[in-house]
Length: 117
Length: 107
Image (cartoon, each protein chain N blue to C red):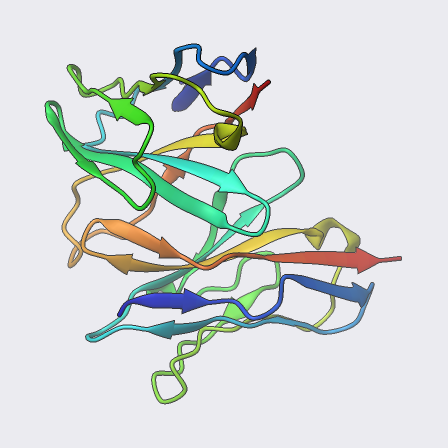
């Protein structure tokens, strides 16, 4: 009963390196989201996905790439990491329940603390 | 434009004092609002949603459409309430987030 997990939990990388953050959920939720959390900026949406093979940009997508070949996985890749991408990254998921019948909720992973040196 | 505003970055109160975390929103339509909480180094979790009209951990929040507000209230703050609180507005299948308010409850 893992729910939603993220790996790694902590990562230190160098500027210019490619980094992939993993997100896995066991609920078969349709929607998945990637956020970054920074002091003074709150939570900002990077990318989201409505289903396998369907992804869309959020508020701050530049420098990030996502894919979703399977419903349960939603990896986030920083193609060439920069210091400005030092942040805490949260993955979240939500079901495709109708807004009229079931309460909406996003479920969050534990976060990945990424430091780019 | 759809927006959520939390005017206070930091709120500091003493244990046993009442607490109110402010949230204002801008939305054309019938809003669906939430409060999420993040305790130190933990994941975000839903605290309450306005449609449920529930009280969780002593917190309540009432939607005021006239004032476009969804303030979070608790009559007697506890030290374990110290956390980051986010107000969020549902827009299609996404959430629009406020910047958060850090609540510190001092002994």
